[in-house]
Length: 77
Image (cartoon, rainbow, N blue to C red; front, side, top):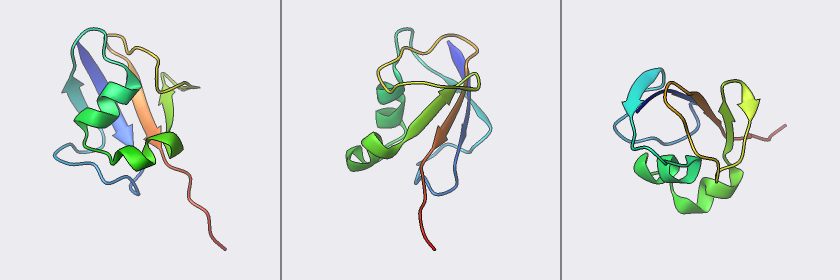
C-alpha cells in the first residue's frame, strides 16, 4: 500500500521528507507509522494525526492512498 505523508517541521523524522509517498504494509496503524518514522515514543501522545483531512486516532488503520499529516502542537508566547 502507498500513502502520502506530510508532517510539521517540528517533528524529528528520520530518512523521510515531508510530502513523500511511502510504502506501508496492509494493516498499518498511525502508531505503527510513528514507530517506522522513528519518532520518540515519548512524543506519540502529543502527535495529532490527520488522515484525508480528518483528525484521527493513533490506533486507526491506514488505507491505500491515504493522505496523512502529522502535527505536533507548539506553545509559546
